[in-house]
Length: 304
Image (cartoon, rainbow, N blue to C red):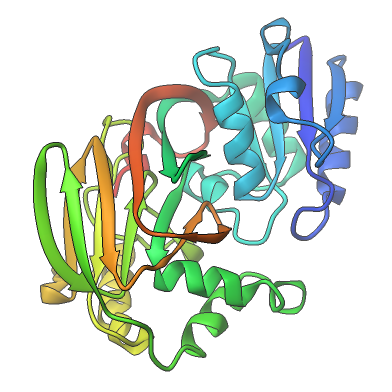
């Protein structure tokens, strides 16, 4: 590595003090480091317009920051290193990346990389890119409710926000996937590209960020307590203890493209960002192998 671009969201999560240590280490090793700040006045596309003049791009922030930089880099084949500086840092969790400066430097110089899928949402006339997970219903409500709790509780804010919801609307759901239609009911529909959620727990089986498919998960019921058995099954999967059986509490599908319609309408989120005043219907499609990312985990470990 001779030249590295750092794109930093200074307002993300818990502060980026370890990023400065990582930057200083790169400079000490003779790397030419260029730093740019992501803000309301700039766009990821503008910040990465000359990305092909760098050997790698470091995206420092939460999942939303890392995701928007990934989308700006799509098709450029420049390796991106997600630096975990947000609250949940789920993209970094899935790739096995932590914010230890020396380990990150070693990953930058000698680590493996893989091309992964990205995805796009269309809500009305607006388009949004996501990398980790999008969803409607309970998970969008949970993320919205967690915002005021995150400064004090960190990642636990998501759990507390979910358990504060005594009841949520159970909706009639229509899934139009790759030319066929499924009608069902539930409290949430998640569109997953990566497979591990908070605390490294698998969201569901069969999620692979490089298979050219999105995994659709319908959560049944009308209260967060209905998720407890599924969480227990995810823990079993994580610990490799016993046979995993989600029963009829979860429905799982795979597709390249999907439109979700619900009655009543449900709120929408993508990579931890709630789309204000937006509700279903929503359309999503996969962008196969669109960006190259550095990873610690073995390639086969990226799927659940």
